[in-house]
Amino acid sequence: MELKLYIAGQSETVEPSESTDCRGLWPAVQTLCLRIQTLQAGCGGSLGGFKPLYLRPKTLDEAVSLLASTGGQILAGGTDFYPALGDRQPVGRVIDITLLREIRGVSFLPDSIRIGGLTTWTEVLQTPLPRCFEALKGAARELGSVQIQNRGTVAGNLCNASPAADGVPPLLALEAEVELVSAAGRRRMPLGQFITGNRRTLRRPEEILAAVIVARRMDHAASAFLKLGARRYLVISVSMVAAVVQAEAGRVAEAHIAVGSCSATAQRLAELEHELVGRPAQTGIGVFVKAEHLAPLSPIDDVRATGEYRRDASLTLVRRALDACVGVR
Image 1 (cartoon, rainbow, N blue to C red):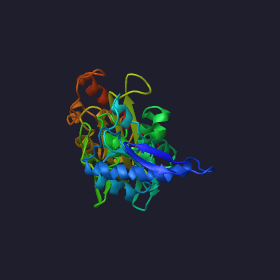
Image 2: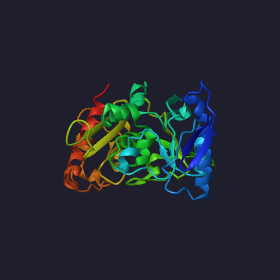
Image 3: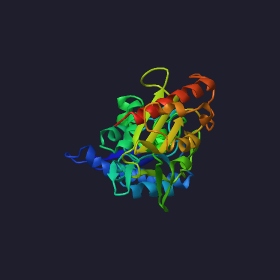
Image 4: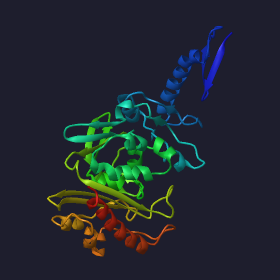
């Protein structure tokens, strides 16, 4: 008896025995998928109405080779990928990178901490990180539901590049860099340069965001994350603030403050950071924050809030975040 498998108009013959189970059909399925992939490449990615081809590489090298040779959409946690489709189906190849263990997890190096791109927000929360990462953990707790935190990845949050991405302000305040990998090699750049606008980044189609890297200059600095929305959980923010404050001898030695949801990209408040240096690191430091310090922001009116309200709320959040940092011992 012969058994024929059909996928996208292509067929492969299998001669099963009495002991053949589903695993015994897998070689034929692989043969068909490779044949379809070759045909699609020759047809500019389209094969007569064939549904998207789902590929699941096991190593980073395999993944970037696929992206370099035939292109495709990257699927990681899927928490942004699928909602963005709505009722539509994916077009072209979908490259599922969830098996790439080499870019998952947190590594501690002498001069930096490396967060793999596939690290989930739950894994961020569960990892013992230095004090300066408390703002990032605060953002992880606020990021959607527990189910989203279990699936959503750090790289996905950054590559989606939403102005309201919870993970961006704390990583911006930590002066994080991103590492992008392709078949041609690796490159690094500051996160502040990587995200260029609303849903826009410098990631090339053939690249994977493999890691987020934070230099270990401020391990013992205090940090805080505050978010304002229409309700306590499962909400897109009206404004959010991350602050990192390094104190020495009772005074501010260095301060980093980033505000999200109030511009196309999260913004550092450089002038305020400069003016805080040398101030007493004690409760009440928030009074030094003035409305003019928020000049880099360009909040808009939308269904969640007016631009004026966003600016006023951000002023309050920045003050509270700074007080929270100096109030922690």
